[in-house]
Amino acid sequence: MKKYLFLLLVLIVLASCISKLSEEQNMRLYKAYSERNYFKLDNLMSKIEIMDNNPDWLLYKSQLCYAFNKPEESIYYINRLLINHPDYFMDTIIADLHFMLAHNAARVQDYSMAIETGETILKKHQNLYDSSFVGVLADDVNIWNTLLGVPKTEVRIDSENIIPIKRDIAGLMNFPVISYDDNDTLDFVFDTGASKSVIVKSLADKFGATILENKVHVYGFTGKRIESELGLVSFKLGDIEIKNSPFLIFPDSLLSFADGAYVIKGVIGFPVMNALKQFTLKDDKELVIPEKPDKTKLRNLALEEAYPVVMVQYNNDTLPFHFDTGADRTILYYSFLNKFKDNFEDIKKTNYTIGGAGGTKEVEVFVMDSAMFYAGNSNSKLYNVVMLTEQIGIEQHFLYGNLGQDYIKKFSETTINFESMNISFK
Image 1 (cartoon, helix red, strand yellow):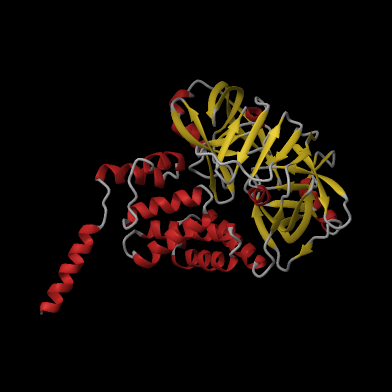
Image 2 (image 1 turned 90 degrees about the horizontal axis):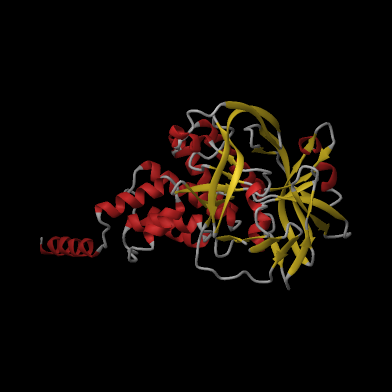
């Protein structure tokens, strides 16, 4: 009896040692967490002391590490929660922890962990999500299975590199990508909005792509599901060597527009950009890649899966926007309209064509005459801003728009740092 009383006393003492958040703190933190407003959550957490034994604090810390590109740290915190506090959270949060864990694992190319965690969601938590989410996750798991056991991507940067940029007839930024074996050069689109890199089928062999088994599927911006192959491509950007980078291999027809008048040969997407750590778009003429990234304290850039998210201020609200160099203009999502709908009662609808890989789609939109936005250390007024009146494709419900080239072109330099998670405009 004395033994049990002693153990009970020990448990009571240990429980009393657990740091606690106040009810108000936890309410504000959980709201930012559930809305995936990483920048607000980061600000709130910066004002709280470290509570390394508090499950709620660990939850918020794991999400911040996920969002601010510290996948190894996020994996550490998530595993602590799943192992030490398996019954503390409701099923929706447990599922969210698995979701972050899967994408953290994919970022560090631990595809075995990504597959196992993704399959856990599909088996145990599928009922918590809509069919589009389940479909995308199932396709991701198939991609991770296809990449299982392949060599990891290698990047070698020995000095600063300056890569020339030119605009194609659609106004998109292109730069020369050099094949690793024969030094053949092709212009690829530079697109932060692309979660994966792409090359067309007719050029995959020319670039020495190692085509992997299994067909894979991805979704285009319009929501169309696209069948593709997957391959490993080695190439150079200036003197930078990139080996075994995963590329989707699309049929040529998917990247051919206006009856062949405009053709995209390839797209450099997030995985390559993340591996470069930092780059500057300068004077709309050069891509400057330093040997080592700068160290900055301000975090105003985040990641959702493999999509860069930038902190944008509008009407004194801090809103997460998709940062998209592959979009010729800024587009406000349906969630933006919902949030500020009282401001747009007198605006008339018009038709607008959106598109990307997989085709185009005509939708009804509102067009704002002008709107002032603040991003990073900058601000600019944009004109004729398109606002969607319906949810399109697999648009993330917690994002309020994409910040496109009409904003980026206002400045002579845009620097993106995936190490410090900072974006700045000059």
